[in-house]
Image 1 (cartoon, rainbow, N blue to C red):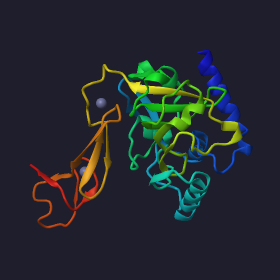
Image 2: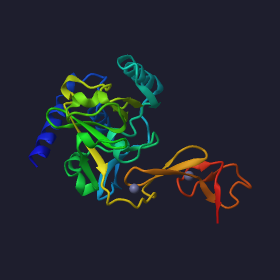
Image 3: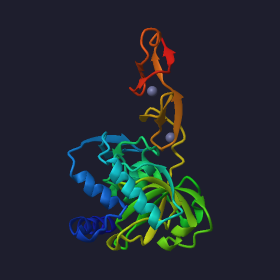
Length: 270
Ligand SMILES: [Zn+2]
Ligand SMILES: [Zn+2]
């Protein structure tokens, strides 16, 4: 409770005195500030246990010029980062790490305090730094214990010796940077402002009581041939679009019965 109160207090301070945050701040804060300007619909999405509230953001408000500027700044600061998907404000780091690791994600998961402070309530547990493995989720915290960024651990380059953020250089991550791109990067290659500096880390893994996957949780359109279905634990499967039998006899396109996309290829369902 005390921890949570501090976290909220700290995030209020930073949110409302954000005049010094540089345009290069890619932490959760820059994303959340941007979302607050929109009047978005919210929705509850299941985690392995319980549900969390997210913003539904179907339109990417980032113009191509702005997107290219963001990418240029990031690449200039961190030449070794690898771009996996273009800038978007449709999803944020927490949504990518804990809801649907896809560039087609359109959920903003910003109300993360309860989830991060009570992970077992949501079917997750905290992993000690010595036990971290690929696939675990990492959350960066500020000195005031405010969660500032989340990513998925892809590789442990050398053993972690503490929960200090100094260990970030030993981790290869995939994470979504605020309104900017989706990157594969060293944990220490990440853009933040002076007020929003990573100080410590916490690691999360889905509880082993979750072992039956249910892929009907979120369905995202993937490409003209496939859509991707996500379990509440973020595992996913890709499958061909499904259309009513005979759909392409008179029309080039049909609506996928599963993802709702207009498609020109699909499995006939009777
Ligand atoms: Zn699952
Ligand atoms: Zn589909």
